[in-house]
Each structure stands twice: as structure tokens, then as C-alpha cells.
Length: 425
Image (cartoon, rainbow, N blue to C red):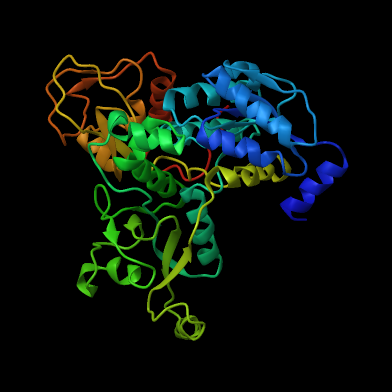
């Protein structure tokens, strides 16, 4: 039975999936509105640090939904997560520290968790997936976000026995590595979105984080630090993302990548060493070969999140989750000169942007995951523009929840060895 038919059955039985949403910004509000028209699903809790935003989302939902369910509207995430009228939580905050606290509370309250918070997932996803799995709960990234949309194509190809050479996304925003909330303030206001979020899109952090999440879910790695970011279209991308000896830019296959010119879509580049299969792909006009592009020209972000919500509750399955130990990391790079003694703010702020590299390179170089730039982080040395933040030039805030969970993750996981969840007694 399809998810849609299962939702119709829930609707018929008057037993909707009861959803609590943490974060009523652009993404959260859009998803809440969408759920008002989905059979067998109801929003029963909304939290936002801006209580007026939570109220606005709740009022809009109630004005559109024919189903009238009791709804918790609050600025305290714990009230939504602990509510007996909520069975699955969506984190739509995009803030690592908030996401860490939401994750812990959802685990403690025995609620499934769906993340529209890539930032926390790339920081502590390995340990949280482990803990939720051990508790018999679903921990999942969201359908509609580029990583999960790419996983769908990856698994589609692998199910047919094809080799996936490259997997990735189109970049939606111009790359402005020095972007900050002041630079984007006017545009963010026009788009009705957080200035910090838009700055993280423009300075590249969001793209790096999304490909980080994809890497951790399918095992492919960046070909180089920060990836290549070539400009191409569907007809030319397979040539661009080929090995150097074949006229492309890659040193290796089996990589994640972003491409300017393919937004807002996602893609995989595949091949088959079987001559009859290669002939069939050519015959079906997939491409000229020997490498072929499977391309989805859109991703619907939070509007697809209800698919993951339904999958979690109805099928006890996820849309995307880590394979095990971290495979890649999004590490912090200074986007301005920072003086010793200065406070350093985090994602989408004024101080740092994220760059993708392998987990092993992060460990070797002592680089800092950008999700740990949270709380009171202070430069211990002068840090120049473009310089990586390290354990030697900054002091992290060890009182934050995200730092504590990351420390536990680092203790429990050995890079490259843990492929499946291990049971913790």
C-alpha cells in the first residue's frame, strides 16, 4: 500500500499523524500550511522563539484545515515535544544548538524526529541516528531537501545495478564568500526569510553542508576540499565531471559535487560496464555515453517534508540518514580577519563560512566542524581571512549541548569502521 493510501486510511479512521513543528520561519510556515491539505495528518504543536510567528502559522493552518485538533502554540520547544497530542517532531530551525536540544528532548520523550536542520545533522547525526535507532525511533533528514532528493536518484541507479560516479546538486545562489546578514538584509526581507539563512546560502555553507549530509548517507566523498563547483548544464555536466585524463576536472570518481547551472535540481552521473546495458541507455536517449546523467529538475524543500513524516510514522523508515561514522565534515573558515580575543559567531553570521572536506582530513588538520561554532567561541590567536579555524586558534564553548553530543560521537565512532548502528547496552 502506498503512503498516500495509508494516509487516506488514517483519515478514514479519524486517526491523523499528529505533528509538532519547531521553527515557524519560511520553511516551517510553508510546511505547516501544506499539512492543512494533507489527508491523515494534522499539526498539533507549533513552537518558535518568536511567539508571534508561531501564532501566525497556527492561525493560518486553522483557517485552511477542515480538521480541528487541539494545538500547542508556544515559544518553549519542550512544551510541543512533551505534548501527548504530538507523535512526531519536525525541527525546522536550522540552528545546531537548538537542533541538539530538540533532538535530545525528542529522544527523551520517545518521539520520531524529522530534520529540516542539515546543520545539526552534519554535526551530530551519527550519534543521534544511533541513539534513536536503539530506542526504536526514526531519525531522518527531510524529503525535498537536496540531499534526500539525491539519495532517491542514487538508490534508483544502484537498484538497477548501475555504478554511480558522481552525485550532487545545482547551486541555487551566487557564491559570495564574504556574505553576511547585513549584506543580504534587504533581499532576505523581500524573500521573507532569515538574513542568517540567506547569508549561509550565499557564502556557500549551505551547499557544503548539504553535500556533507549526502556524503555521510551514501559514502561518496568530495574530490577536493570545497569541491569543484563547475558550471554546466544537463548536456555538458558528464563531460565536466569526468576524470582529468578524459578532459574533466576530477581526480577520482565516487564523489559528491555541486554544479552551477543545474539549480534547483539534483543529479547523479552513472555508467555500466555491460555492453548491452550501455547500448540500451543510448537507445533510450539517456545520453551519448559512456556516462549518463539522471536529473531531477526540482526539489520542493519543506513541501516534501510531510512525505518523510508519513514514512517515519507509517513505515518506520527514513528518507536519509548517516551510514554510521562521519565520512565528510563541513569545517569553519574565516570570512573576515578575526583578532585574538574576539567572539566568533556561527553559521550565516559575520565570522565564518563552511567548507567541505573528508572527516579524516578534518582530524589530521585539526579543523573545527562549523556546527560547533556555537555559544561563546573565542579566537585565541589572530585568524586571517580564508584561514581554517583549528583547535590552536580558537576556543570552543564546551557548555553547549551540541559540543557535548559531538564529544560523545567522537568517542563512540572510529572513522571508516562503523557502517551499521551498533547496539549500546
